[in-house]
Length: 140
Image (cartoon, rainbow, N blue to C red; front, side, top):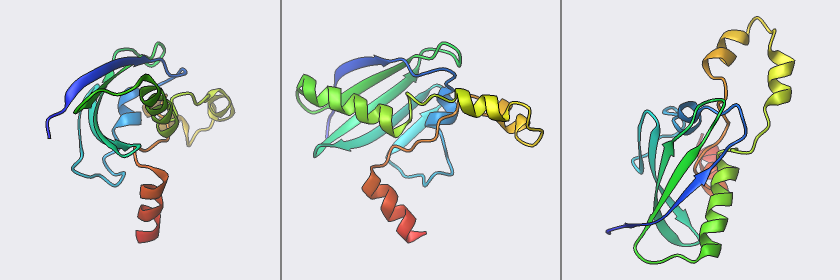
């Protein structure tokens, strides 16, 4: 299957946001449908019965985050499809999550300080659908 670049979208997550710790979780049920190098993640994605290729590129920093999403497909995609896909990406990767209260509550915690420093701006998230995530939970 040959996929062509259909659309490039920019997303601005809430701050703080760390691209690499959000998009690269190697212990998170890895599969062969993705590839990662610092600042870039390639991912296959099934959305509304269409098989897509996505490329996520870090264009920002923890305090000024910016993500470029390149969408690849075999044909054209309507704007409404792309809009719902982008909203789903934001949801699955928690790109609009406000971490302010979490950091305020635990900023002086002696146990969590080193972890927070290392993973500052990381979001919980997973590219799998709810169905795929439920299957993982059942298998475990």
